[in-house]
Image: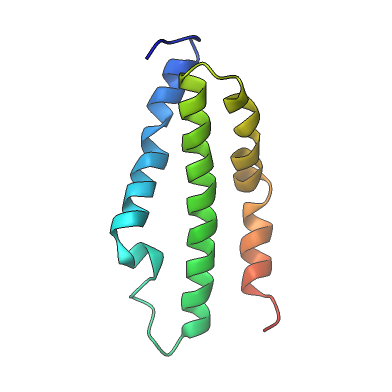
Length: 103
């Protein structure tokens, strides 16, 4: 793989976190469906499942964007805007309104 940008090496270093989370999500049922939450709390378990899915989505998008950037594809920089917004702008409102939505 050829490095096209001096900033690509920073993206290569940052790629480890989303990939590690993705591996954890795929291998651990405790992360996907928290077992520490009692079965008598299905709404809380469902909330945690929704929030963890949201987190997995923006980490996966970060990883895909970093792979594109490392490969020298400029579209990766545009794609990186989406997970940045999901994390920095929409995370707290998403978690709040998901928790307090009417059932």
